[in-house]
Image (cartoon, rainbow, N blue to C red; front, side, top):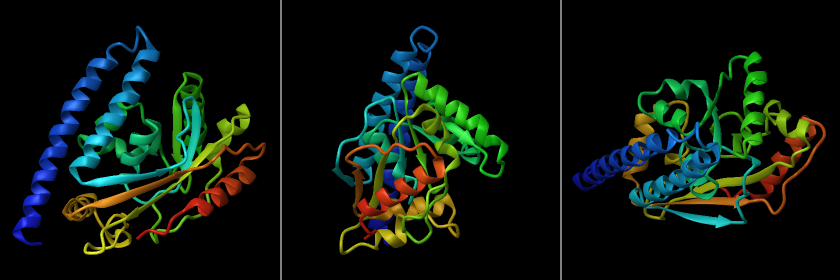
Length: 255
């Protein structure tokens, strides 16, 4: 990378840290109101999440192409998974509570921020943890939250949509709650490296390595297509399959 690109990366990284730290300092203040008004805490959490995502996207020059309407809480939402930038798009459009891998909680700074946003953490290596997480999802929905899961359970390594895993759909099935869905994709300018090669976070890259490449991009476009109507089901495997095909139908190939 040339000097101009390194300067772009340094400015963006600094701006993201300052922006994120400032917004989450406000979040800590809002969270003190939780014992008095859980509804106020949830309203403040969603608002700050959307403001943060809008600012973060502006800093890295990622514009949004949104089709369909994001659901209103309480809801259950599933999408495919390509990058940690998915969180920026979902935060901006839906302000959801995320279900995330347990190891994210251990990340310096980022783990603390995720916990402050009421993230539900799951140990993907333990089948026993599914029951606990499903109970937390149900509790969050009962409190009026919108809950999101990456239904493939991991980042797609080939930038395609893969079959959805059914276990975490149990709360929706038990409550007879229709599940909303959306398809996520990305594009980069013609003069830039392809989103398929840069934005998709692959297993052979560390998080800092991938973030460096993303911050070096001149610009990018995040694409999110929400479904027209949620899908209901009485059996989680069949529901997972129906949601998978619905997301696949709305998926735009990664550019």
